[in-house]
Length: 212
Image (tube, rainbow, N blue to C red):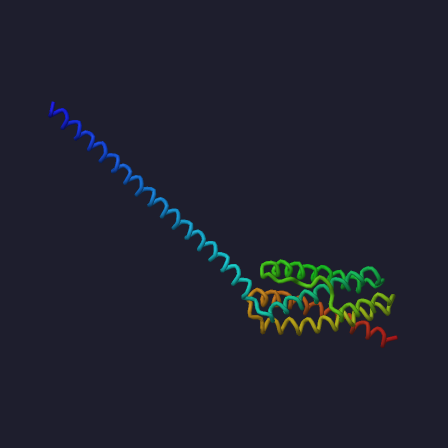
């Protein structure tokens, strides 16, 4: 009888001990899981903030001078496209119209590429011409015939391309951002070709006039 009571007590003690042991394991597992989750959360947060920081610093790398360079290139391209379209609608001269179409095509392509670059750099490009080019376009719109052709080739063909060529050379030399420099370098040969064509047309025109 006494032995049975001792056995019962031992069984009861064993059962209680087993319960505590199981509880301890569960608590430890829960604790480790919580720690692991917290660590993962912290790692995820720091990773996200790190990525955001990298993006932010990437945008911030572009200097004010490089941003202005991109805006200047955009205005130059827009001006050639706009006056080129005007020449296509107003000129009756085949050579002038061919030159104008090349301006629309080449500068339109350069502008499109610049807009794509601007998006990656976080730069907002101008959507309209500056005061100087607006005034030039306004004068051209009032002209027609040979007077228009001469004014268009002199202003958009010669003067603008000389100014753009000098500006691109300066950007290529001074740009801090490799992509901005590359954009200027890529456009330079095209502008040189346009300028040469405009000079040849101007010389041929002058020769014809003097021959008369």
